[in-house]
Length: 486
Figure 1: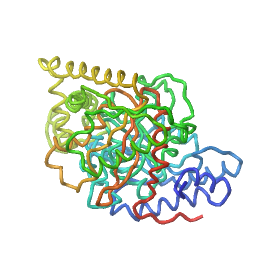
Figure 2: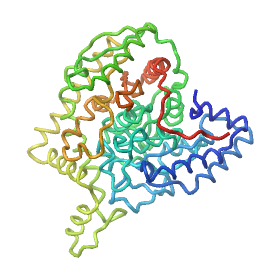
Figure 3: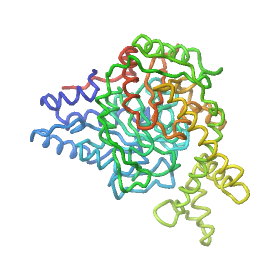
Figure 4: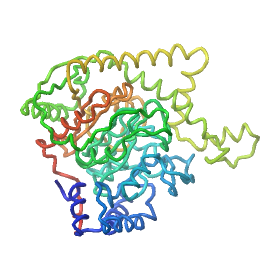
């Protein structure tokens, strides 16, 4: 337990050693002072101290709950009433949320304090946070390197001690890849167990909101708060919700973990391979059986993902037309020119690239050749996992082939950037849960992530195994953080 853990903060708040106002103020001051360098937040919540004061009243009245009075950072594609929701895009630059997403309602009901909105790749499209309009999150371990995308702002805020926990969204690895780059825990839950109501859609069949945190226990506490069925989200599922926190620290002896041969390929940095294999050895020492398995359709995952994700993006982003609440061009012309100019000015290059690709694969004559075929391959990828989970309890892989790369190093090559997500994309196509946690550092002192997959609704199994690695890796080094005062 560290001074930044939710358990430590909870004990200090409940014992009266710390108030939520003091805690929130410290996080706001630290985040404000570091934001010019790390560019983690698009905006801060002007009502954060009022919310903290309200939480202090509830604590003084005897109320106790895990998130009461705890500050939380929110990715800027999740609606928080009264705050901007920009998706780091010119298209939504002046948009103010008029309602709370379901996850925000749940957090507010639990007494959490909204710190602010964190930066992201524009409309969650990117792997480095460099497609953001202005604020492009930097890595707290080395500010010349990227924080990862698209939830890079949330991951950087947690890593830098500028938020104890944060929400992100994961469409193809957007929580787990930045978690790996920044040395924090990132969890993508089973599709459908966290409501997407109030999340600005990128690719509706892939998007999922999830936690970023300093530990597996903190991630489990946040998941406990936001998981559940929601009638306002037609993709939400009905399920028996367990206590995810209770899974932390469970005995994992007798469980079986699979190592897919397709994920241990040439091109993985030697330091990454060594750290990931050390995690495997740690599980072995705790009685976990390890088997080599195969996920034979993995080689098609990148192409399948970019057909399906861009097709859904082109449909979802059609609503941003300059007519209602989005950017409208001032250039002269008729209705047709207004649409054209507004979208040309409002969207960045990566978003335009994906809209055009998505429109193409959905167009007459190409739908069957690309979109329908991609959906069939998606089914095959999901079946690979179903077959694998008949043999093993979980699957272990590197999260990313390497560590955080230098800012600008891959901006000119979209295909090279897309390959950053090669180990994380299949999880979203299959709808299963995945978690990334730090397992060491490379020779330059940059964090390395190890990833675990489990079958649908098996987050408890995932968290048990992840916490078993976490206990023994003892990843206690962090980028420079000032101590909290209490």
